[in-house]
Image (cartoon, rainbow, N blue to C red):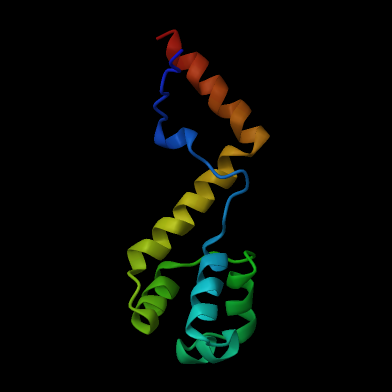
Length: 111
């Protein structure tokens, strides 16, 4: 008996928990053997603010993404894309927003 292969839409493929890009940046720094404090200094950012990014408490802004790109060679587009994905995944988990979106879908369906 064959089982049918299901094709998933991109919005259906979500991790069980959103992954903040700071977690990936931490992994990158670990792989390079560089401390957070040293990297923060290298990109001209206060250590406390950088540590908040690493711990998922602060977003990676466009300026910060460009600084990370200059220091690592990893495109700023990747960091901004990761941050955008995280923001969308987090927003999709917001029950209040989900209710608003469902109401919009229902209103549009009758047009």
